[in-house]
Length: 202
Image (cartoon, rainbow, N blue to C red; front, top):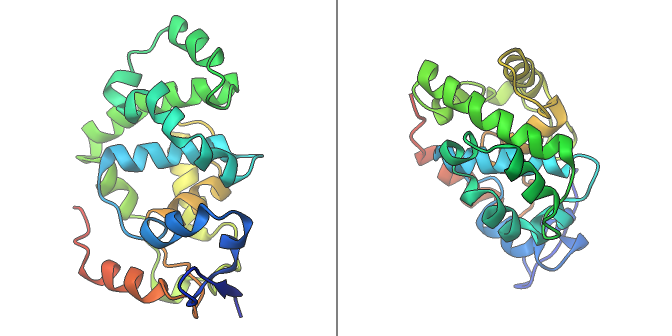
């Protein structure tokens, strides 16, 4: 059984919120609610790649800095970045200055443009990997899955970088492809309701 802790209103929340007070707002308003906006999806998969080897608290604290540094994750703009932009980003103390991850964002911006041309939208591509209910593990018991491995494999085949199955699974949890809130969590039902009414992009 996945664990919960009392939230600010006394109702149960996923236990990972205990790691930082700012997690409650992110947990209650964003995590697990379905997303079909290409730019938000691209932002999240980039931030998950930056999180690799770090904590989400570090990335969340720097999220506005990342947005500023990367033109709000407008992949059309990022795809045009040059070596000068890489050097600019490496000098930006407000973000995680990891050359490989910075270069991956630029590479992936170019790859997402190719994917959109082929598939119609990033959202339509992403949501094709939504797992069936019977294939889901119990909430918060897995760090990757068959579907995250499949998306990771396909993205890497398309030339994407820093999109391993664990990174993709965290992305799927956050963007609502999976409702991974603890069964007792007060936000699990609102997320499930949002998923029920959500129109999957085609």
